[in-house]
Length: 158
Image 1 (spheres, rainbow, N blue to C red):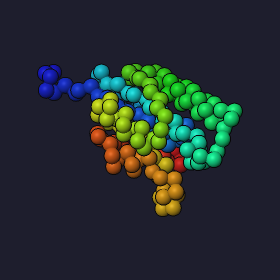
Image 2 (cartoon, one colour):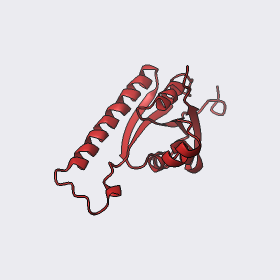
Image 3 (spheres, rainbow, N blue to C red):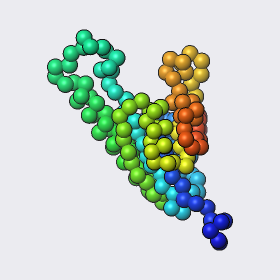
Image 4 (tube, rainbow, N blue to C red):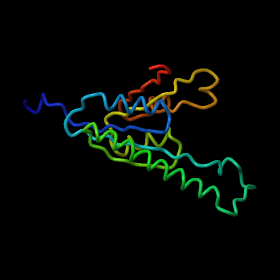
C-alpha cells in the first residue's frame, strides 16, 4: 500500500472519570480498529475542592483542602493508569496525564497543546434544568475543541 492510501496514526484524547458514561467511552475506544501507531492519551481533570467558592473569610488552618486536593489527584492518577492498562491489554499505545482545573477547559487545552486528532468522551445526557445546573462538559468540549469530538452516550440498560 502506498503512503497515500495508508491510514495515518492518530492522536486520540480520552478524558475519563469514574462514571458509567466514561466507561462507555472507554469501551467504544477498545472496540474500534485504529490505524497503526495511534496513541490514546488518557486524561483526568481534578476540579478544585470548594476553596475559591468559599470566599476570603474561609480559613483552612489544618490544610484540609490541600490534602483533599492531593488525594483526589492521586485517585485521578490511579484511574488514568488503570484505564491505560485496559487499553494496552487491547493492543493500544497509551499515555496518561492528570491536570487540575475545570474539565471543560482542561480537555480543550490538552487537545490544543497535544494537537489531538480526536477527542472521545462520555456524556451523561442531561437535559433541561439538570444540564443548566450541572453544565455539560460534552457540550462545551464540542463547542470549543480544536479537533473532531465523538460523544458516546451512556445507555442505562445495555
